[in-house]
Amino acid sequence: MQAQTIAQLAWYKPRSKNAARLSACSDIKGLSPQNASDIIHYAECHKNLQFGWDFAADMAAADTPFPAILRGDDLIVWRAYRYILGADDPVISGALSLNTDTRANTRNQVRALLISDKVDCEFVAENLSIPLDVVKAYEKLFFNVVDRKKDHSYIANLVFPEGRITEAFESYLENTGLSDLLLRAGYVHGYSHVLYAAGLGPNPYAGKSAAEGASMLDDMFMADGCLYASYGWMHQRQNAVPITNARLSMQASKMGNGEINRNAGTLTLGDTVHRELVRLGQQKAQMISAARAMNVLPVSPVNNS
Image (cartoon, rainbow, N blue to C red; front, side, top):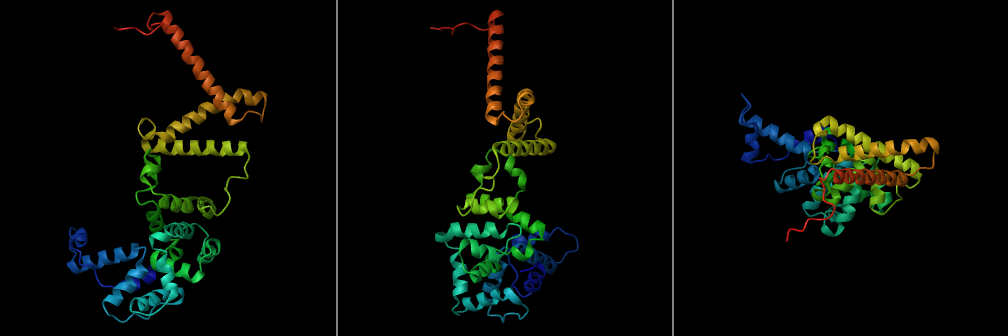
């Protein structure tokens, strides 16, 4: 359902009576209570992911005639309205079943695929073996994204409500649910990553050689390192994993340059890491030896007993 259609339907939908929400506009000079109510009402409708179902439920509860302004697949909202009033509709029942706990995994897969670029309901139905009408109904009623993919702020706020910068924090995986990770995989990388994570497709990187994989990983480390350095992470110790990874990548690259020039194409990433560890061990041994020569480090542990 497009934002324009939502704006039309919003006028028929009962207004919220939540005083806390209305107070959000109370400080705007010259704004009447009615204006504040209209603004909050429209904003809530515009951002509501399941506006279709909520609209049908509110209209049914208010015993109000359903407005005859919907066309095409948007008429699923009208079918939901009739279903709530008692009409039998297996398609609406199927869409509702995706919201149950027993179908949580399937629901997460549907959402992650729907939000992926260049994916429509037909693709989801085919790859997840779900009836096409059920996928369309679920999207219209509970996960309205297909018609709003060009509404970039709306989509980005669904996927990264606090912004993507949260990925840099060390607690990111602990604080992010698997459903959100799957959704972000689809939004950022596309449907192939969703299908693999769901156990329904091959690893998107499986066809790349070890050298290509190492080069890609290095590029990702450096890109993130530069990005977060520009955000102010450069001189931070806490939550500075992107900077640390970029530095390690640079060190490994420097260690491998000489060997690569003498024997191009034969030095693997494992060889480079091994040589770096050996070099660091040698440096530590030299530092300990120098410290002992200067009598600043005991040869054996001191016994205080």
